[in-house]
Length: 479
Image 1: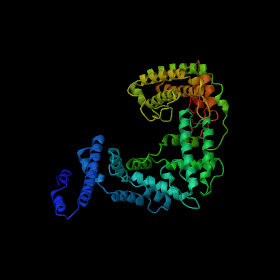
Image 2 (image 1 turned 90 degrees about the horizontal axis):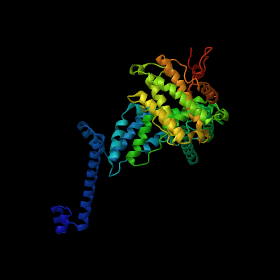
Image 3 (image 1 turned 60 degrees about the horizontal axis):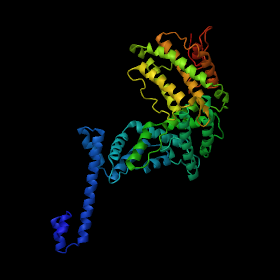
Image 4 (image 1 turned 90 degrees about the vertical axis):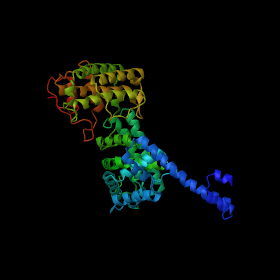
């Protein structure tokens, strides 16, 4: 009986074996089951403690975290059920509802600290009115656009591009393929430096619309071809699906259950939606925008423009950073940050590693150093990578044209900076005329819609400099 004692079995249980009240097998099973329960408890305690350490949780948070971690699977499901029933109350969207209810936050017996942390965050998120409102908006959209033959597949809960499909397996797979195509093409466009309102965005949109149209079969009044109605509907779907709270909800659920998280779609979705706003109707791509880009002249123009803009940046005082500018309501600081980003983004494209930190602070505490460093990095990338002689993206946009777009941006924003600080607007006279001509070639066919980067063209006064005329062409008032 010493062996039973060494295994941790209690004296009373050993006595029952000795007295032949229980067999060794029965006793071993009973104690193994008890150990399983104890191990699960210890594993849960360990995961909670690791999560507390990783999150830096305060002492007052510990009781709530422990309570949430100890909830049973049924209690966790009840939290989700209550969320769905409250958010979707009165909305007839059965497939959407069932898709939400089917995704339950089942923690494994041995959760990781990340899973415990995700569950604790998820439990807090479900109490957020913003999440409930977002889920309701998606449910109302699902109900409003439900196919005549039945409800949607529920794919819209996990993939923003699969917002509206019918209930057949084939169309579900088609919607998933379209979603992946949109993600890939959008990211390729960003990587290639294709502005969503540039003429070069049109072929990508045409391809996406052609792939998306079949997924609309069976929906009310489905669009038959690429046109304003089709583009408006796809834009509505993307805007409806752009719910950060819902995206976070699904990311946390995947972490809790150990399932792979859905691919991030925000970068491609933002680009595609912006392109649809800028191009509300199809148009043919004029490849002449890709021509007449002499790499040597483009590099020369970049050097001349950045020379004069750098002088403007050097004259900016700390108190000037809060001044308004002519550009989209930006302050001088925001304008400078964007100009630094333009250089860094172009350099990253040249190095085949496009940046995605557009919303980060790229200026720091020293605006002059940040801009000067970004200029040096960009020029080194342009010349060291062969960018000026390469093509980028599925439509083979010349790298020289991408750099030329940066030159146009920097000259236009340099003009904004000069206006904001009261400096002369005669910038880079050696290169401004050809930069203006490049702007007409690249952006002449670009739409001046609500989704475009440029306001309607203005008139420049007689005798205006090339930089003034560029500003007028891009929608600024040079008067």
